[in-house]
Amino acid sequence: MSAKRPNQQQREGTTLFAAAGLEQDAPRPLADRLRPQKLSEVVGQDHILGPDGALTRMLETRTLGSLIFWGPPGTGKTTVARLLADTTDLHFEQLSAVFSGVADLKKAFDAARARRETGGGTLLFVDEVHRFNRAQQDSFLPVMEDGTVVLVGATTENPSFELNAALLSRARVLVFHSLDAAAIEKLYAHAEAVEGRKLPLDAEARAALVRMADGDGRAALTLAEEVWRSARGSEIFNAAQLQDILQRRAPIYDKSADGHYNLISALHKSVRGSDPDAALYYLARMLDAGEDPLFLARRIVRMAVEDIGLADPQALVIANAAKDAYDFLGSPEGELAIAEAVIYIATAPKSNAAYTAFGAAIRTAKEAGSLLPPKHILNSPTRLMKQEGYGAGYEYDHDTPDAFSGQDYFPEALGRQTFYDPPERGFEREIRKRLEYWAKLRREKAGE
Image 1 (spheres, helix red, strand yellow):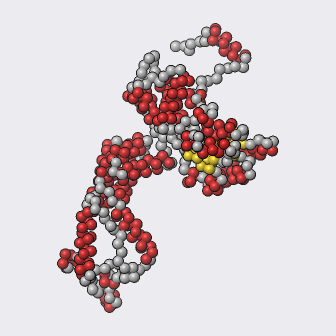
Image 2 (cartoon, rainbow, N blue to C red; image 1 turned 120 degrees about the vertical axis):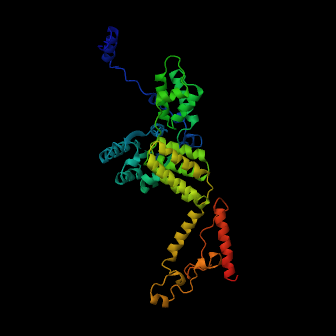
Image 3 (cartoon, one colour; image 1 turned 180 degrees about the vertical axis):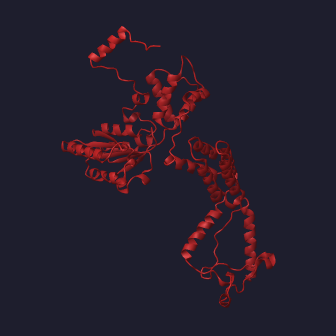
């Protein structure tokens, strides 16, 4: 079938627009059309822009220092930087560390110096500032110190790890939060007012759409636009239909960045806090985002030895078995074994006594240096060693009453130490009884 040709009216309209220099622009995305025009229109960052917010107080003084905006994508970092320039009458200059190099920085600095000579100031906004290397970051220092530019850097990564200490010392870090459900709802209400129509969703689907945004305002509006594009007539989508239509937006998750560490931390703390439901949620989030299941299995083994320990010796066995089961079955079947291990260790009695004891022993060993063990517990394979007293007086525990000699095994210069203090929980309750019994026998043998 041939392409449909424009009619006479369409051709004339196009010619008239072209003649007048008024060619129609391509439609702008909803997120761009709804970009805030005033700082008061930014949602979800009241701790920064509210009546007592950090930026609000700063702007009341009509002065602005260099800033680092740290937060997830779609939380308003670029928008706030642009509006700050407008509010303070500074020229807004934007660079992206992804596409810029030393030459671009030099050009921006030279322009800022020329502007300063005519009484103008410059707000230099650098997106993804953490992507600049150390030397490039150092190049900002002179122009920040002499006031040539007010630097506003935006980063999704933890500035403590990704930015030079010298740069951080000259800038204030402001944290942007992921948008909560209320903030996302404000965006949707504003979008509906601008579009003059409601989102074609029932209550459950609307709540699901809010969750799919994952705290990202830009993503929220993009999803809303997709919903409007997909609706036919008076169609109203339920949650299942919504998921089919949008094919579920992939979670924001970078396995080499903060999202990775935040979620594994949340999983670990949920296990430690004996909350299997929360632990399963974070496990599912990470698996859904493409995390390596063997990485998760290894971390679960770590949780078993750190947070359950000997309160339930089976925890380590179960965790290792889950790792082996995943190795054997692969995805997705093997993921169930990992989930079972998470449930087991989350519901197991908790103890960090072994973890604490080992840490204390390591510290003492380092402090004690190379102290020799007492001679009576050393083997004496040669005549000379026997003459030197190696093995003299050693009692073979199996030949003593209760199979317990009560001898001292620490170096004499160190004296007896206590590292392991099991709690009255789980299997360690039984271990504690044994230790108390042996302590009693040791006192009796010492004549105390």
